[in-house]
Amino acid sequence: MIEKLFAIFKESTNSFEGQEVGEKVILLTRRFPLTASIRVSLILGSFLAPVIAGGIFYNILSLNNLLGLFWFAISLWVLVSWILAFYVLTMYTLDMWILTDRRIVDSTQQGLFNRTISELHLSRVQDTSVHIQGFLPAIFRYGDLTIQTAGAEEHFKFHEISHPEMVKDAIMKATSAHTPTSHP
Amino acid sequence: MLIAIIAGLAFLALTYWAFAYVLLYHLTRFGVGTLPKRIAAIFLLGSFILISVLMIALANINLPSILATLT
Image (cartoon, rainbow over all chains, first blue to last red; front, side):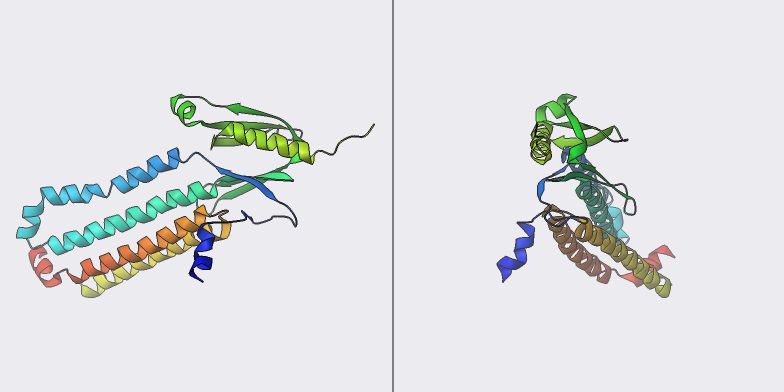
């Protein structure tokens, strides 16, 4: 029973809103977590600010009987930092690219009430290119993946994804499998 | 004064839980894979713990002495 309850945190079919019947998810990718981690670390690091302030002004606070109020202010500060950190994490999590056996879905979350979903059918994929630029991207192997399309929108871009070469290979493999073989 | 403080705290609590609800809704409704569910669970658990800590801190405030100090 408990195992079943916790299974949702361990395994997933990666089903998504708008998924067609019989459509299989091949790959789910997000931005490399470094950028979100830096933001979250900065917010969580701000936990230290009231602790330092408390250390400096401890004598004044205790003399004026304000320690209770100070602990309340710290708790409030941590609570606000906590929700801000998870806001950043939510934005990171909901910004994703899904490769299925039929199409590529780009879901972009820019704020809580601003969501864009675009999709590209595999039959319209013409060419893919990987762009890794900079010291950190070269070390951690993350970068941009651009797909040239046959449609009106010329580019379809995956921004700062982990192992873009692997994703590129997966897209090309899916495209080859999807393209019907022409008979002479 | 006391009513204003209680109203302020109630407003803070409502704002927090409304924002928390929106975050949890987005994570569970639009999230794909296991990551959003894990994040939602950690966030909810942490929120309950932090709110409890906040309530304890609130209960330990000696309001009459603070008001006497400030006035």
